[in-house]
Length: 238
Image (cartoon, rainbow, N blue to C red; front, side):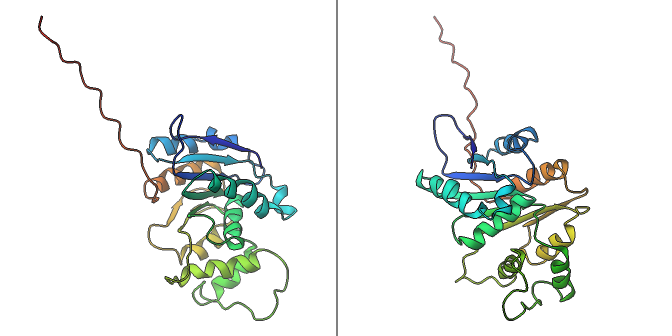
């Protein structure tokens, strides 16, 4: 996977890395154009930003998880990053979740903006059952091999957190008119207070940019120490 690094400070590496995963058919440079990188700096977050060119074809050929883990996450760990967060939009949010499903404990936090969570009928079945807290996974082998058959049972763990089960903090943002909002609401019901952000609008950059700026105010990320004001030189009498 091609990557584009934006360092928090010139000539040094932060301890925290934010890995941005684009949605289907979105270009990595759109994160810059839409102000995602600038927002990180404006909120004084002490984190480097790595934008990943995660082509949608990697999801179709089922190589995404391996490409992300061996080509991005593990090399960045080896470079010394102590904390890595995934920030995914749409199918990029789906990618962040299925990566953690396949490689538990490999990242320290996940931010999903309007994530694709699988097929609407499956989400509707969960809602009809009373939500993730009441839903029972069907016994026996899955009826098909779609990833959402595994994703929803994994997400159900957020409904019943236990100290012995390490789950990365998960933050969800979505527009109330988003075409995937019905599934987003099912997940939102089981996330902790302060982990769900909504806005008006649908599945597009204006909503995602607004949500990202709102989230940056509460995400548990390190911040840079404020730069002390320049001191006026003291005049010395002759």
